[in-house]
Image (cartoon, rainbow, N blue to C red; front, side):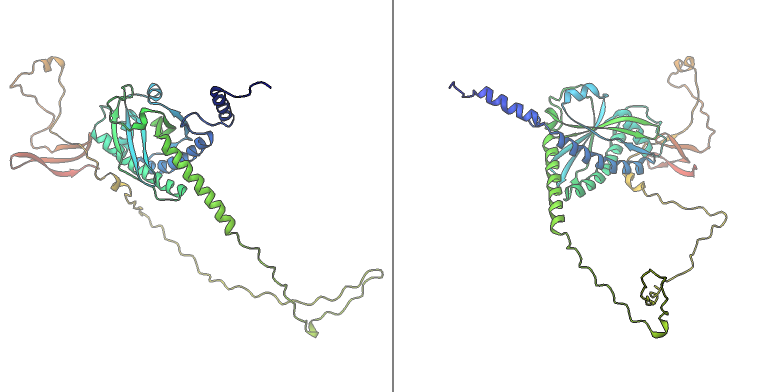
Length: 378
């Protein structure tokens, strides 16, 4: 017989072929089953988050079925718009690790304007602290509701830390950047399609460490196995059949006289008359309806205003305006007087984030100017 001893390279090749046949991933990547599990978790979680975002922007919000894949920073930087807003959310209870949401710059501006009561068209200028603060609050509410869904799926309490939002340029290298270490290697990318009314038709990404994704898959598998075993252990025994009631003997006067069957047919025994079952008593009351009086106007409570109470707004007092040609502007010099469209003593305008909201008069508070509100615009 010849020598049948396998070399180390041949042994490794056999193991690699077996792993490929079973669909096992290379290294620390997820299996197809784990990707499906993470996709289902993300689908349920972001469905809950979409409902929360709807209450914040008062627009129809749709988040499509997620697409799960394993990616790297260089791969997503080539596919995604730059710059963009990165929102970091850490898990403080139930799970170990962080996840990162990546949103496009213009999408953040539209969401912020809608949260401030605008129509979503105020997207001029660069993203500032106002935008980052508003999107952090929105993500806090969305991921908070998502954590509640995770708690139900994992059968344990899941809580998150306050989100941190930053504007980043994805074309830049991560060397020296203040980002999570998992973004420097391979990680889980979950991509969703985001629709908000007719204003946003875009994509958002959720990035997970591979270890966190595997932890969630393990918890869900353990939870499902526990539910299956408890269902088998607690299955109730089949109820014993109840004895059929024996009918009472009929009274003599209630017995029908036997009738003669036609010739060739068997004669049937007389059947006893059964008493009717007792009637169940119901408490019946007349329905009461609220009358619709003319001029009735229903009141609606502002349920969502508390969510944005801490968001700072820019208040501007406008003394007046005018129009000048380029020629006139080039003639400006110290001492030039510009006539405005306001008459002396006329109330001045108060604007909040560029929106005209009130009128007032100028006052002096110690050594600073102030304004006393005289009229609120409706």
